[in-house]
Amino acid sequence: MRRTRVLAPSFLGLTVSISILSLAPLRVNAAGPFYLGTWKIVSAEVAPWAKGGPVPDPAESKELVGKEITLEAKAIRGPGSFPCKGPQYEVIEGPAEMLFQGMFGAMKEKDPKVDPQALAELVGFRGKSFRTVLTGCELAVDFSFGSDPDFAAFALDNYIYTMKRQ
Image 1 (tube, rainbow, N blue to C red):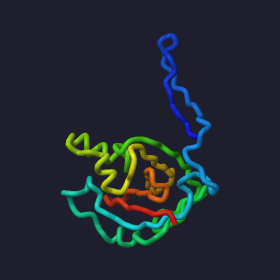
Image 2: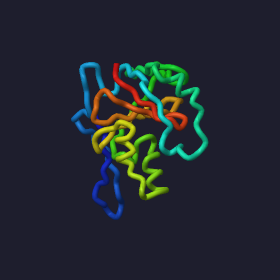
Image 3: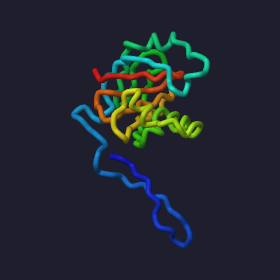
Image 4: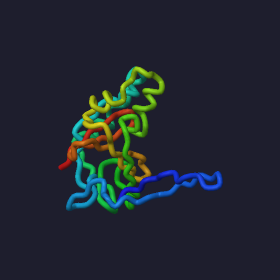
C-alpha cells in the first residue's frame, strides 16, 4: 500500500494533514515488493556533485563492484556495512531532483543551468518519475529505481553505484 499525505480543507482556520492509504500497490511481483531480490553492483562512477573537488577514494568503490546486495523483507545482506536486520522500508516517489537524497536538486539550486533530468539519464535512469527505497538502516543508503525493473542505483561516499537484478 502507498501512503499519500494530503491537506484537508481549513476548518475554523486550522489546516489538517490526513494520511490516505492507496489500495493500489506501487509494484508487486510474486516475490513481494518491486525492490526485493538480489542485486549485483555492476559499476561505480564519481558522483556529479563531487566532480571538481577532491577525488574520492577509489578503494571502496573497487571493493564493492561485483558484489551482491540482497534486499529481503526482514533483512539486507551484502558486503561491508550493508547488512541490516529489520529494515523499515519506505518508498518515496518524485522527479530527478530528489534522487540520491536530493543531491541533483541541490546541484540545480547552486547552478540553475544544471539539469537534474539529464544527470539522471547520464547515470542510467529512464523516465520522469523515480522511486527511492529508504531502508531505515544504520548505513543510510537509499536505493533508487527508474522505469527499468532490473536497474537500481545508490550513492555512497561520493560515488554512484549502479546495480542489476540477478
